[in-house]
Length: 365
Length: 92
Image 1: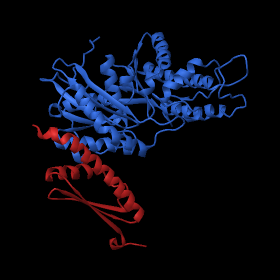
Image 2: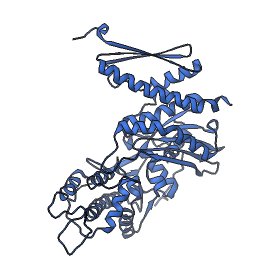
Image 3: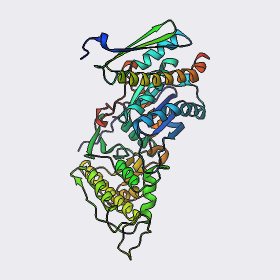
């Protein structure tokens, strides 16, 4: 039997340190970060600054207001990122920005600043796919070799695996993203959006005692979430629902904590199932969870149980890198740049729809 | 029905910059994105010395307001960016 050939990475160690500035603003989180790629092949986070557009409880964020927030805070966030990194814009090799996917107006607000800086300092621009940013940051922070990636956030829910210069989507949501489902339910029960709605759902869920039946909607490798959201919302109109009560198994009542608990358990079990399907399909033993929902510890725990039963393990990052940030854009952008990819200024548009498998992953074997 | 462009509405904005280079940068940055309704909004960006001249011809007055508003928001962001980072750029 011929020995397995170890594929040689096309990305060689750089002959000098490279620096990249990454700018992110596809949703309500505005981020800027500076990354350094050293001659020994290591990646160092020099700065990671983020400012979030927060809305009051019961309200979501709208494109116009989000774009206004990014325009107001963009320069301050970039200034802080450069100061903390202690590098000058002249030392930066490329300016990376989120090309998509995401919300149109906020994306463009950030792109305008990226283009201006690129022209002022005569630096190349690199347009980055937001999802690839999450994946590459997860890889470099956790050191996972070739994991099945579960990318779950407010805007995206995909199961991804790498093969031959492409991050291939194995399964995904057929309608709304997991984070979107959780965020919208948080609005219905009037949870605070600080620091982010999913965090408050997680805390509420810990108090829940009753597991209420909700639709379980995996569709093969994919899943559907809008029906679950409707069902969870319908429980708040149930005559047993008590908005202010504490969970009590003795009385026949439904509390917000019980609903949060039931919603999390159902949705996360679905995520574990479709991730396990992908693992079984490609024979992988590693799971990497990226995206804002990945910071949920219950999801990490459930995924861990499944992975261990298969003799594998789960990799996850903390909220610095899980939640949208600028450093992940810098990381993915610098990897592209070092393989010779740049975005000409006339093509530095933004797009709301940008599939993860549209990107040619030149930097991996 | 206004079929001819002469029935359309025109707005011209002149934005002065510190130098011709800065005005050209602003033009290059803003002209990348297409207008959301190219059939109802025509945009012309020209640099005259150190002034960015933007001329919008729109089908309705409402579109003139929306287009101009968006343009001013964008140009204001570019101006602020040049203002904050332009000085450091010249220091090399």
